[in-house]
Amino acid sequence: MAPVRSYTNWNSRTTDEEEQIEPYRKYFFICEGANTETWYFKKLIDIRKELNIHPLIDIRLLEKTEGDRDISFPRRLIEFAENQKENPEIAFDKERDKMIVVFDGDIFEEKVLDYDELVVEGEKNNILAVSNPAFELFLLLHYENSYEDDIEPNAEQIIQNEKDGHQTFIYKLLLARTGINPKKNSAIGELAKNIGIAIEQEKKINEDIHQCKGQITCNIGRIIDEIRKDDGKECKLK
Image (cartoon, one colour):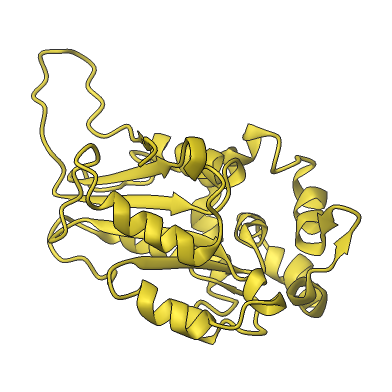
């Protein structure tokens, strides 16, 4: 098994004299993409205090390395997540901790037919975070009125998400908003500061990943919102 990097700022201490405590629950994110998603979730982790994440709740990004770096197919991502639960280095507690697998839905619109089966299997032991067509949709939601201005008027083109050269339609919409190449510029991660906007904008589209086919869909904001509400007692995310 290739090594995996675990990114967290859990219990960052200002002095060595401060007591080290352990989190009650850890949320692990495993993502399809190697750049855009990584930059976003690292920034989200960095600003956990500003987001009022409970002190006993830890958020971690598991970064794929070496031969695992190119794992992107959703079924393989879920298998990778299951394998990491047995990795002693990340200390996954099966009773308390949660594994969140982040992937795009566009592949199921185009050529893969087993989406419903994948969701049933994947949700048995994990939380699935899906954007249809792609993660760029979730990033677009971080802008005020993005649903009314960008998403609703272009709904059909977004779900088709055809390529113009190497750029998909949703990619170009995001690029027009940000002026940033989300695949090459780590500054895209700064959008995490607007997660509150994204959570509210996301409520205007379909958040039910079981009804994802043919619909603009995203549930990542809802998942992050539930993590923010986790007080270390009962987790509502299953």
